Each structure stands twice: as C-alpha cells, then as structure tokens.
Amino acid sequence: MASDPEQPPLSSFSQEGKSSTEVRSEREPLLNGIHVPQDYSLSAAILPFLFPAFGGLLFGYDIGATSSATISIQSSSLSGITWYDLDAVEIGLLTSGSLYGALIGSVLAFNIADFLGRRRELLVAALMYLVGALITAFAPNFPLLVIGRLVFGIGIGLAMHAAPMYIAETAPTPIRGQLVSLKEFFIVIGIVAGYGLGSLLVDTVAGWRYMFGISSPVAVIMGFGMWWLPASPRWILLRAIQKKGDLQTLKDTAIRSLCQLQGRTFHDSAPQQVDEIMAEFSYLGEENDVTLGEMFRGKCRKALVISAGLVLFQQITGQPSVLYYAASILQSAGFSLAADATRVSILLGVFKLIMTGVAVVVVDRLGRRPLLLGGVSGIVISLFLLGSYYIFLDNAAVLAVVGLLLYVGCYQISFGPMGWLMIAEIFPLRLRGKGLSIAVLVNFAANALVTFAFSPLKDLLGAGILFYIFSAIAVASLVFIYFIVPETKGLTLEEIEAKCL
Image (cartoon, rainbow, N blue to C red; front, side):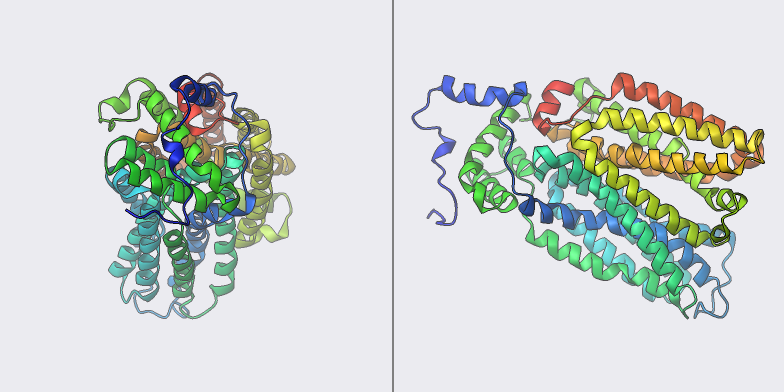
C-alpha cells in the first residue's frame, strides 16, 4: 500500500536501533508517574471538546425549556392545539418523557458503545436529538409528542454516556479535568438558555413548538462536528490490541487521529505516543474483551463502586428537591422577583454558572478529592440549615437563603462537575463503555427515584425532616468519598488504572 505523504513516518513502531531495555526504560515512567509533562495545543483541544459538549448543552436546554413548554401547551388560548387539556398523567409523561428515553439510551449504550466507539455513538446521539426535536415540535397529537420526547431522551442517554469518554480520551492530561468539567458548565448554560428562551416564548401562540424545535439546529451542528472529528485514538488502539482489525492499519489510523486532535505542531511525536499507549495497554492487560462476570471482580468492581457511588450520592443528596423550594425560600426572604419562578430559575442558573466556572478553573490545580470533600461538607451544612429553618427557625428567612445558596454553590463545585469527571476517568479502557453506561443508568434512575418519591415523602414527613435525611445521606457520601474515591489529578488514563484500581 502506498504511503500517505501527509502522514508522519511509521518507523518508530519498530523502535529501530533500540534495544528492548531502552524501549522499556522509555515506557515504564509512564506507569510510575514520573513522565515528562505533556505538551499540548490549547487551540487544537477546543473542537474535540466543543462538539461533544453540545450533547450536554442540549440536555440542559431540555431541563430548562420543559417547564415553560408545559405551561404553554396547557393554555387554551396560546397552545394552538385542541388537545391542550392534559391530565396529571399526561403532564408527567410530557415532563419526564426525556428522562425515560435517557434510561433507554443508557441501556442501549451498554450493548452498542464498544462496537460503535465514542465518535459514532455521539453521531447517533445527534441524530436522536434532531429527530426527537422535530417530532416533538411538529407533533399533531399527544402520542406523537411523547414519542418525540422519548427519542430526544435516547439522545440524552447516548450523549451523556459518550461525551465524557470522548473528551477524557482525547483531552491533554494537564487540562483533562477542566475540559470534562466544562461539559457540566455547558449543561448549566443549556439550563439557563432553556429558562430564558422559555420565558420569552411562553406567551407566543404555539410557543411550546418553538421551545422544543430550537434544539434541532444545535443537533445539526453537533452532528456535523462529530462527523468531522476523528475517532478516539484510545478506542482505535483498543481494537488494535484486541485484534479487531489489522494492527498496522489501526495504528496508522490512531496516528492520524492524534495528529488531527493535537495539531500539526505535534505530528512528529504522534507515533511515539501511539507506541507508549500500546505498551501501557499490554502492561495493563487490555487485550481481552471484558466479560459480564469480570465487571464485578477486581479492579472492574472497584471502578463500578466508585462511579456508581458518586452518581448515586449526586442524586440522593436532594439536588432536585432543594431547587423545588427555591422560589418560596427567596420569596419569604423578601425578594419580590421570587414570585416569578422562571426568574428565580434564571437567577440560580447564573449562580450555578459562576460556581461551575470556579470548579473548572481550579480542578486541575487542587484535584478532585479536595473539591468533592470541601463541596460535600458544605452540602451537609446547607441541608442542616434548611432542615432547621423548616422545623425550628421559620422566622429566620435569611438562614434559609444562606442554606439554599450554599447548597447550590457547593453542589456545583463538587458533585455537579466532579461526578461526571470521575466516571469518565476511573474505568479501565476495555470496561469504559459498559461501565460508564451502568453509571449513567444509575444516575438517571436515581434522579427519577428522587423526583417521584419527593412529594409523597414531603407530605408524610414534612420538608424539615426530609432535609435532615438528605443531610445524613450527605454525611454518608462524605465518608464514601474520603475512604473510597482516589485522586486522579495529573495522571494519564492508563496511570489511573495502574495506580488507583
């Protein structure tokens, strides 16, 4: 086969002129954590982050826009339909349809992720987003509306599964934490945009159609972007070492992928990086496919415990429930804007953006554990304050506002971005596709559980007791993080597997 003049020389695959001892001495430091700091081009790292992050943006937008769309579609004068008189079950299907779809998408990801790879899974997610948005926007009746919500939700499940993996596997190690955490920033941007556009369109005839349809052009941009981006080099090399294609062809493809991802400045180093990654795969025993039984043994089980534990605590420490009370807390403290729930949501969304930005800036300097431990400690205190307000101190509204803002801020520097970052980093490569799908499934299932259990528990126990229970759960999560969750700052993905599992 004729060589491509645009590609770097491939002679480094054979390490000509070097003994096995010399080659080994170059590779072993990568697993011992004393390698030379990785050079990278920041401009080249932007697009491999940006297009997958659009998947998070669309997820956040759906969260923000749905509340206004629900109001619009039930208006007799502004809905533009004859079937606007929806009952409680139908409203539940409308608001939670994308969540059910995300659960389906997470199950699908378990079976197809390793075959498709991260890039093609994101392409499918973009297609689901587009089809779901269009079906929902043009739905002539309620059943088709629900189908559109389910299809859009499948896109959410696939995107939230593949985007953290693609970003983590293609990002330079020194800024991997920042880039994966920025995906959470994009989710929050989407939430704020959803609330904002929803408030602008809620008084428009058939405004709910525009709210759902706005997602479609973003999905198209995401799809074209992922079509242009290369496959993850680590996924390509995993297929090479597992003999799922011609070894040399796959290594050549991985080199071209690295060159596109890192920029032309680093073309000469790409073959060496491929050799180093392959050596690490061999050292870590990535040659064989993971079996279902193996997923619950050894390092695989530890990775599952860490990831599933983090995303479970992320949801059952009451995040959806605290925000439910945001408007009433602010209103009781004398904030007139709080009478408008949409304005409260936008206000808190902006605060979330600021605090997520803080986490993005410091995550690769401070590390994951300090942010988790510090943030969750703040969550414990905030939930205790909120519980005390509703039981003992109902005339101290300022205390409730402090508790609310402390909770939102601490969540956005800890569980919000760090949960998604850790599950993207912690799994061994050959387990990453299936393992992360289980973690995402746990995340969405726990979200659904908290959402549906909150109202009955509030009626049974009262808000104060419920917040105390959430505070106790947060204490348990603090213990879990301290004893179970490792620090991954500054480590390559292969070093995390070698040293932390």
